[in-house]
Every structure is written in C-alpha cells, then in structure tokens.
Length: 371
Image (cartoon, rainbow, N blue to C red; front, side, top):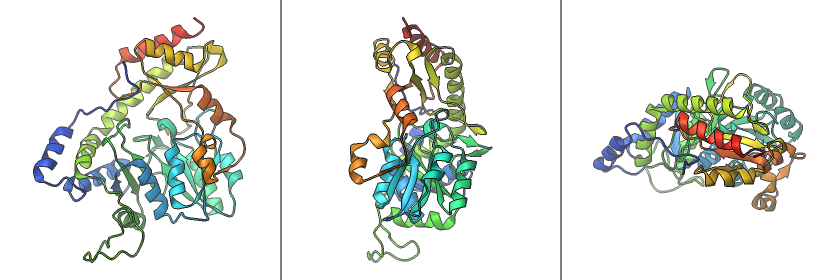
C-alpha cells in the first residue's frame, strides 16, 4: 500500500539519538534540545525557538504567552485540524469560526473583519496544507482593531509569503513535528518568535513555572504546564532541520507534478496558490465535484483496491460535537468549509515519493472518473 505519508529519515537521526542515549541525557535537559531550538528558529528566520512535546501544546503555549484567556475571543478558520480550536479552548477563551476562501482554502480576511467584536483578542492564521495565508491582509485587520496575530504553522514548515518563511510572519507561531510533517521528531512541537519576552514566557510556562533565573525551591508562583521535549526527540529534530531545505524542495517538486497531472482531470478541484506565497504542499489534496462522475468515497475505495492510501479532509469545526458543547461561536455560514469536508481527500504526499508514484496515483484518479 502506498501510504498517505511516511517520514523521511535520511540524515543524522540515528547518530544523534545514539549519542543522546550514550550521554545519559534523554530528558529535556540534554544539549540536543537547545541545539534543535536554535537551529530550527534560525531556519525560520527568527531569534527564538521553544521546543515542546507536540504541536497542540505549542499553539496553546503561544496563546498563553500572548495573554489570551477567559473572556477573550480568538477568530480562526472553520476548516482546520481540531487542535487549532482546542488550543484556544484550553486557555478558557472562546473560538470564533469563520469560513475560508474558496480558492486557497485559507482563512478569509474579509470574513475575519466582520467577525471582530469588543472581546476579540487574536486572529489565528492557519496555513492549511502548507499554503500560506494572506498575511498582509490579516495583519492589516489586526492593526486596525488592535489584535494579536498568531500563525498555526503546523503544516507549513518552509512555506513562504513575500519572501519570508512561515513562523516569521507574525509575533509568534507554533509548529508541529508529528511523524507526517515535513520536519518531524515523531511527536513534538515548537513555538518560534523574535520577541524575547514572549520566548521567556513560553520557557517559563512550559516547565511548570519553575523560576528561570533563581534556584529551585519548589514553590510555584503561577499555574504552569509540563510541555517539555525530550533530548531524544530533539536529536531527531536537529537531524531533520539539517535536511529541511532538501525535504522542502522535494515537497514542492512533488506538489507541482500533482497539480500538473490532476489539473487535466474533469471534476477535480485543487487548492489555489496564495498570491505572493510559496506553498510546501504538506498534503496534496483534491475536491471531487459532480463533473468527475463518481463520489469522493467511491474514489477512495477504488484507490485502496489499487494499493493507494488516501484520507478524508478535516470536518469543519462547526460540526464538532465537543466544540458545540463548549459553546464555540460561528460567524456566519460555512459553505466553503462544508464543500471541502464533504468532497475532499488527501493523496499520498510523503517527501520520499517518486515521480513514478505520483504518476500512478494520478492515472488511477483519471481512470476512475466517469469510468
């Protein structure tokens, strides 16, 4: 079975992990944590990186550092991974969902502005599937209303907007290093920022609010979190960061070939590029329309028969029972988000895909339509 994704471990991962084990430092105090933080932050073009145990807590930690809490509202796209919304919920703030752009599938700045209320504290820009948001328009909305702007860059390692990398496009950003990400530690995440005060807050809160500059007396002034990354995970992350440019090049090349081949198939709709943006195609997705002549579910079943794995798109946040019970707010209807959820699927997207793999996938998609 050709998987939707699998990690590419083609660098110093084994050597660094072996070194970490040999040193005896396998916890969060090992040297690879600091080395990974510095290397990944530099790769993103920012000054500070704070490594944590996964992407969801990275996003939560970033929101906490910005002062988001009970009574606040955070505007974010309805079409996203549920972790984006859960991070807001964990602060006690209220997620406010807006529909996405029908072309780029990213948060729509025009709809965002209409959703701003006196309680709005922040806008969350989720770079969906590795395509960057329109950060110029979102930043303008944030400035007009005195709001914070945060990047959920969990899927966008190496993506660019107007020549700057994801992670450097706002005051603070969060990444995931799950096994299917362009840069992986198996499980892990990182907050990146140019603001030393935000970085300091993240370091403080991620480590149970132990004092940063004083001896530990095991008295804690604030409610903190145990969000630390282990030295073993960081060792993998450092090796991955050393190869990040190569992996980004592979994802971009594969994404372009997919688009070239799939664009010729009637009834297949693809994610459009953001003007001024450089997508990294974390996932190569498509939406099946009526012109295809078959349903999305029929195509997925056929792909499986032919030895090709695929995945459903995310369901919209307004469809999530847990978030409905939480009381999340919906700013308008969600025709685009619903269309994506009901007709979308991911195709195999690993960095290590070959041209032959991609051509085979696209040929199966082509043959099944109206066959």
